[in-house]
Image (cartoon, rainbow, N blue to C red):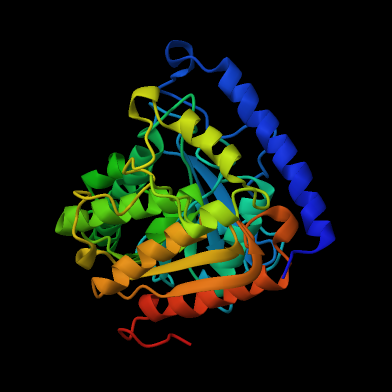
Length: 397
């Protein structure tokens, strides 16, 4: 079945503008002039949707800049369910007081979902209107705190910058968990003189209060969209290798939404759907050439092919992985192959293929309200709740 005429027209306009953006970046790219350690996390073609610390439609948001040496940023999505039923902060339009929640007071804890946006490593951001809407949807449906990562974009910051940013955020979350534990312990015990102790003079200022009050780091989910799925899978691998070094943070599962995987052997979907909707193969190759340095560009690069020999750790050690693919996506078969390899290694790795759907069908702004996008969000929620349940493997609702 073919997508609707309206979607086909939207795809044509989208591809035209996307190619123009990538051609402009290619023309201005030189390895010496373009590389930028500080980097950029958004493009003027995709202006950011402002964060809002008031509970709008059940979710409050705020932005953080956690690395003084780069442009890496975060947007936190806090669902209204963290509030007590008698809270005065529960109404829409009221700023949440969690900017400085009371130390020692019990707060409802929620799992953390670390989200990586799409855009071929070169466009998009964690604060675009469509990514903001998708993350709000995930925060409400899954009942989690979503931390959306604004990683550095290529070509200003080529590989491995985006992957390094993903791991930096995971380590930051682990440190936040430890700081929050010390902060809360000092807040309860004090030092006998009515003061929380020496930690308050330094460590407390480093604590992110929303996460300290409401985050449950032992139940962390990774979610990656398109190229963000590549980053999520890399972060999951590094989390496996780090193991207890990340305590108390635990990555319990990951979701790969239409991963941006490639390989040197063309698949059936690559051949049949090379000119697919929204993101065709030729345009995506332009993005890969902007992301990978010239001397490292090859189709079996570990950043693009998760099944190349020698890429550790062993697949059997990977966390449970839900893979989502679309019928009309030329990258579909690569995602299917990775999911099958995980299942052969005895990893819980279900595959969901959505019929009559295109790449980014559940996350593009023009497609967010389609039946496929809404069904996908529900399917993600059902699967996620299996791994964030406090009752150990049972559904939490």
